[in-house]
Every structure is written in structure tokens, then in C-alpha cells.
Image (cartoon, rainbow, N blue to C red):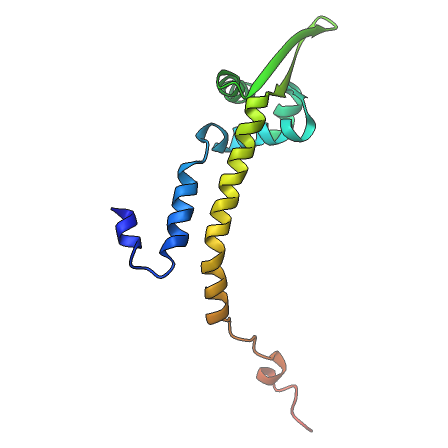
Amino acid sequence: MALEILSTHPNAPHAVAALEALETLDNTIHQKARLGIMSTLLALGEADFKLLKETLALSDGNLSTHLALLEERGYVEARKEFIRRKPHTTYTPTEAGREAFQRYLLALERIIQAAQPAETAQDSSEAPPAPADSRKTTGQNRKK
């Protein structure tokens, strides 16, 4: 139904492409905390619980919940050990997690590409008015 409504608009193909790309976004990664976790792990290669908690400003419980879901989906692996008699958990992205993240980024790029033609057309036809010269309005240009 929504696509039928769009079909009459001149930029309909771009909107349809954006909506189709939007449907391919991985909801597991799309949530802000999990996107942060995956971004950090892919950038660093691995990170321990404390680093993720402090970097992303998440509570222990919140971070644990998000990590558990990512682990359940096969996107991260946890390595648990004891260091000086204290538990230490390190997380690494799996190959499946890396691939899912790349697919997620490609979907975002498709959305951006689909949105650009409309912005470009709008920018050229609706140029913002030039700012007023403040000297003209204050009378500073008057000859004395």
C-alpha cells in the first residue's frame, strides 16, 4: 500500500530503494548499544567487559544482556578466565558477526545513496537566501 502511494512521486524509485534497504537492516545490530559493542569489537579486535562497559557507558546488567544476545546470535564469542583470582571476560567478534556487520553497513550505504538524489535536487532548486549584510541594517555604511 505505501509503495503504491509512492509510485506517483517523481523520486519514488529512490524512496522505494531506501525502504527496501531499511528492511534489510539487522535488528540485532541496529539497537544503539549493540551497534556500539559491535563497532568497538570490530575496531579493536577484542575487548573485555570492563572496557566495553566504560567506553559505552552501560550498566553491568545492560551490557550483559546485550552481549548475551550477540553471543546467542553467534556474532561474538566470550572467553572467560581468572586473572589474579578475579573473573575476566574478553569478547571477540566471530566471522558471522563480521559478515553481519558488513551487511548492516552495506544496507546503511544503500539508504544513504537512495536519499542523496532527493537532497541534491532539493539543494539546487531551493537555495537558502543569502544572509543580510549587517552593516546595511545598522546604518554603518552611511557617509558622514
